[in-house]
Image (cartoon, rainbow, N blue to C red; front, side, top):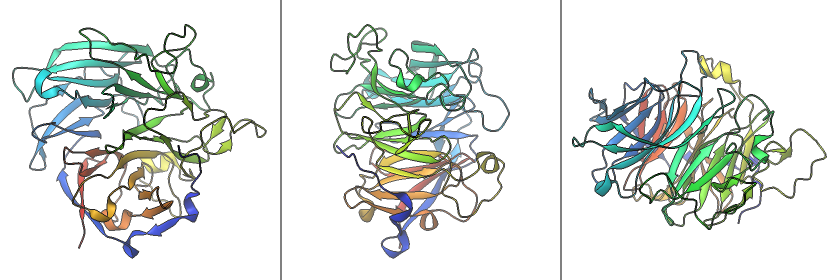
Length: 390
């Protein structure tokens, strides 16, 4: 397991000195897109919008007919920076046969909800009445909701990320408590007719004082995690508080990892400078949280900053960009910066200039299609496909 720290600013290599990656627009005219998924058989693009819709995209243009609309169920204000709404979606590994997919949203009572849904007889429209709620619990604040969903490529279990419950500094210490679901990655078995089962191999299975669903904990707000499709390792983008953004790592099959929040922020003691840090798992990358979040939201340009809200991505396992193979791609929502991390050589490549224009970008997520090619989700309404440059 990786337990070392990469000092971000000391290891940057500019991408134009090594390889060139470009991008093309594959979808535009979207409304607050947070996630892109691909039909496991046809590779059709589905886009999750924070406003409550799943849109199918053909030839760059969102279809007028929505795959799913739950805008009447979600909590989302018109104020900039609201972190609620429609947050996550993933297709069941057997979607072609059973038509199941899973969603996560914050409802009007400010509860996080994870549900199973099913496609209707029309393959382009979901059955809104098919919702089966698996998890529902109240959020104490309106931020740090997490809500990302992924299926493990090796075990087939559903993994779910939740933030610490919000506000500042995790005031209730939720992320270090194991009797709640805040600040965690959960692992559940959905291969059952109703509800879910807790895998017996989960680290806290059958412990009456701890939530058996928990796989890892000590996270502030895991905004996008993913599996390396080659080996099942997990990479997590965990949004920082005041000083540090971080990328965390879980070796395939290893549960019970504690990433330290709110004792630690990145590799640093947070509330108590004399904390005992060696009992927590260090991030594999940290970088300064030095941009201003509100300035980013309103579009004010900031110079000489790295970011203030990490967006986790994917390890590239496609075939079209050879020099990118095996590198972990991630970004920052506040600055739109893009990086590729070669974790075998401990090098971070700055690839923003190569891929995107100088226009303003707010990267809310990445996507991986059935061919393992990568896509960039811009919250401002555009989806880009990463491509080999010339």
